[in-house]
Length: 493
Image (cartoon, rainbow, N blue to C red):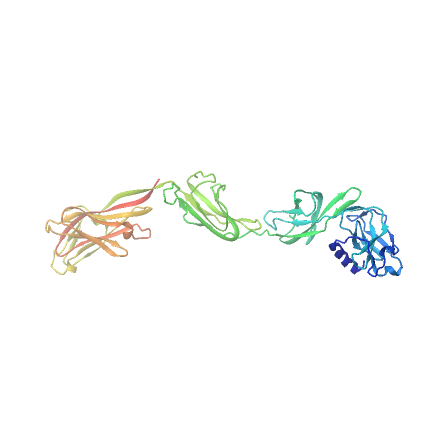
């Protein structure tokens, strides 16, 4: 067919031309021009899977026909045809009846029916097709691509599809029912044999008509992607690896933290057998969840060790799990205790400083076992530094969650030889240095109240207390026992 005929056929269809009796532009009566001779094929079905419908036309030699154009249609002009030679007809309509030949004034819309008509024909295939894949990205174990079919009128169809990049992958005549408004249906495409990559599914609808055959929609393509690479999984960060889920405010929960850009995340807790006993709610890109030692249904889990792992699901649905972290659930609740811990003066001493004129005696003047006697200026009477008698002491406190209050006490008194003597007691403060007060001469307990225990704690576990006791200038004092009165929090099993 002539190229100009193809181009103008579309123009005519878009313009929705109607056939009207008309005169030629130069006032020639179009209906007076002799009709062309048309040879129609024997077949009665046009389109679908039927053979091409080819007509042969020989127009009149009448000079008046030179400036006219021939066309064909059903109830009006549908498309142009060649005035001399063969034309293959493709008509996008549903129609049963004869085809008519029209003569038009040039390429205008002024056309008349020439009176030439074909034997009755049947035309089908006037339906469109629109495809969509709700999940454009497949991954993991996804082997089936869901395809939404719409665009054609409601009814029963069959769907043909294949992969443009891999034509051997596809399926034909899959039943699909279009229902609703707009009419919509769905089919499944098996893409299990495709490796990772980007693909285009091409599909068409077919509809069967008795005595006609199959009519087809236009082919439509839609893009999708397959990604089966598992995502990387970061480690889980725990705020604590031991919990006491008694809801008493101490280590009731552990906070689980993880980040993984553009992925969906959730935590799983597994028991010793590997069974998942708890699954957190899901988060995206970053996840912060608190776990208090319970199962999915909220019941408390038995004490013991549990594994925590992060599960990452990427956009394609690929799932990966990370390295496990261990959390121990322990029995016990936090209680506050106040106890006094006592040590002998000599047994707790770790260092001493004694001036040239003084002595640090064991035992003291009263002969108490484990006591210390601070006797100053007993061999000479010199300066304060040379007269001093000083001892340094240490006690390791019991393990605890926290220490609240601390007081230092000393049992003793002035030696009978110097009954007015006093003794200095000082606790070591890491920031402020020694803090203390003078114990008077009376025999009994002398208490140095420090207040907050955390001011006086040393060591890697912050559970060591240091203090010193000293006197000088001729004083003499005996100490039998040192005591630490402690208020602290501990776990009671």
